[in-house]
Amino acid sequence: MCYNDTKGLFNIPQEDLKKEDHLPHLIDLYKLYVEATDRVTDRRLAINRYFLAYNSTILGVLLACFTKAWVQQHTRFMLEILQIVGFLFAACAAGILLNLLWLRYNSKFEKLNKVKFDILCEIEELLPIS
Image 1 (cartoon, rainbow, N blue to C red):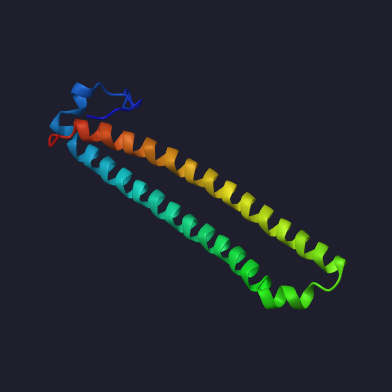
Image 2: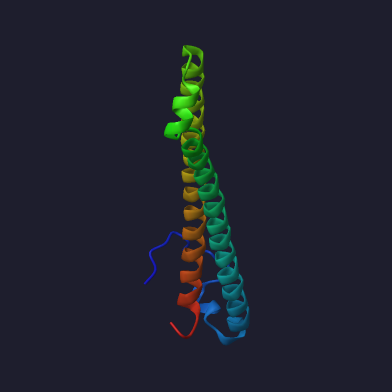
């Protein structure tokens, strides 16, 4: 059973949609929504890969720059220490903003997939298999 808010999705009464002359159209519509849902999922995975790569790059740069030998070699003056702290702050701020953007994208894709699955569920109720 589907729990959705898409009742009344079609302009035709559901009893008329269950007739066999609408069956090929419903199957085509079902296939279209399944493909669209797969594409949304693929886009979500691709964006997750990009954000993971960006976060890994930020972390890698921080780890490469602030190894023990590098810090010992470059912390002779107070100005350099302030530059290091400023760089750390900028990198952390960039990482936080990047992760907030990532969360926003994921929530948008989650909402889009939920609506598509609700529509698929309603179409499934009209098919003779269900």
